[in-house]
Image (tube, rainbow, N blue to C red; front, side, top):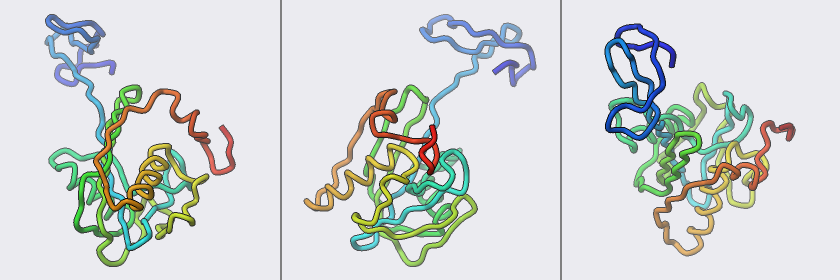
Length: 191
């Protein structure tokens, strides 16, 4: 941030009174510009023994498979956002949605919230997807998953399915997380 969105003056980074974090502050109008984490919401659509995944048509991770998800919009609940993203990316509806997985990722200023739900009817593709497809556990393209979080959610889902219990899990991945799970930046494996 370089300029104040309120008055247009150049902002400075400082710790405001009664605060303990560096913030962008306008010395002209004294507005504090807070920068807060982004919330990513998604849903794992389930159809019998299969899950619905989308192949990304956009960067980052173009061509990789993912769970339908994206940034939450103003004015919507987390569930509404997850259902919207599922419609936008997979042209799919889900029912019987339940909160399933949360990731706090402070080193990239994001929070991920995933629901699990039953696929309700047909599915297709949206503008951010090259294709969408149902996969059984043995057919998941594990080496072509877009993000470590997708791998975690799918691995946990298939383990939970064995017991029939789907607890809500919360975790905070480390900065080295992507390296530890072997995350590559392109389908060809180039970093």
